[in-house]
Image (tube, rainbow, N blue to C red):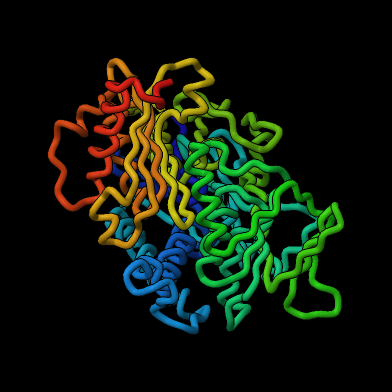
Length: 481
């Protein structure tokens, strides 16, 4: 039997790779982790999920958004907010998370070996070649019984958009604003109204920027409940976001003759100028430089790695998890996939790939959802009823300063089985998990009616919505599908 250096070699240390490493170690494996950056955590920790959500919280606090219902709409914690004000919080959170990851790995240092700053390629079914990015002459070859690909994704590169990380940014490099500017931009163009574009647009608008959110068609968060999306659009417009629909770009560049300005020229002749521009035109997988096809790993035309229900590629000893395998490409699902990939690779059976998971959009206000939407139920011909709770009915919402949110329950009108939960408003991304728990156990809305919720809490919204839905059904009022 061939002797290998490791039981498992993992390429990438984002949510999928890191979870895979810890799980493999817990199962007794000797593990190697290869990471391109000097710091573990991948895009999620360094320039994506964690920094952007921390930035959002910093904006909410410094602008005093949650206090304005009590002290007036002009209230703010700090008048002249700087880049440093925002990023001091980002740095502290990121540094703390890095320290936590390092501490956890230190607890497994006898089984997990980490190679930082290395680019890796897959040389064969059981072999990975890597070289130090700072010194390509320093290379190594690792062999393993199993290989797990968890290299994540990066902003989609568009050749004719000159991302310079000074005035024109992509969705990852936007945080280099911290290094390139001393003052916040007074105006911002965001190209692309997907999740990332919506999150950045709403956050910077609340910060006080004039924001144009530019979309090539009239589609906006189509996976979410239409009534909630409409509410979000109105709230974003109230904050200062101007939606520019049906707007294809002709060119993006710096403003001629002016330093520090961006110019967007649309095909219909319109021209927008702003202090900064963020390109948020989706993401692409970071797997095309791994040499996977040379060793027989099947990928799609877009570079997504094809895997079976065990997260195993067409090469039996190679597995993949996270953004590299496609939808849903969330930090939460990637982490779970990493855990599962390591378990499967080491012969441990775990629950199948999850099809029920919460989707959260960290706009201001948040949107969160799990289960069916009304659009999906109507398309499938499934009868449903709806129960609603508006935040102005929830005492805790008044206490925390948000009376404009809403929680919607979709359920079977006869058996009352829960079909979907949709929330807009403060703490939506926390609240959604109670609905997820009931939904995952095929529960009914009677759970919310028959159980006691602490008062005052945001969870009370579930009881209000459930009682509202039952009342509608009993009265045969509009709302049943």
